[in-house]
Image (cartoon, rainbow, N blue to C red; front, top):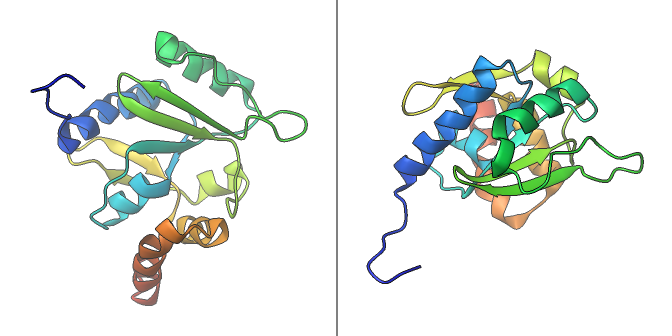
Amino acid sequence: MEEGTAWPDCRQRGSQMDEVVRLFNESKVRYLLIGGQAVRLEGLPRFSMDWDFYVPSRDLANIEKINGLLGDDLDVPLLPLGEHGENFVQTYQTRWGILQFHLGGAGLPEFEQAERRAVTHLTETGIPVKCICGKDLLTSKEKTGRPQDQVDIDFLRKKTAAGLL
């Protein structure tokens, strides 16, 4: 980074991601926000560099729709889940920030099941985002078992105990 150049403000990064979410919503892309950004939209003040999207693993029309919308921002096209589980997480550095597409993962229910239980949260600028429900998010975080997820797990467990998930 050049001297005197500031890092982008987190709010600016969020509004940039709003553009991606708006594109997905307008084009009826099937997605669910998972990971740290989903926890943030559940109410935990949290920073995350990337946005994790759960998409149906073999819905070729949906995958092609994503490829068409994001176009040149993807250095290689998003691919469906391979026969032996390859491509289950695909990461892209884009003009909007880091996008990760998950076609499965530890503790995630089948996409169709998660989609039926999904919730919609609003970003800080009022853009609706389809998110994995809090209970599925908690299960996923617990099954992943990463030490950096413990604060998220504690927060989601407290919401569950309070009857808020």
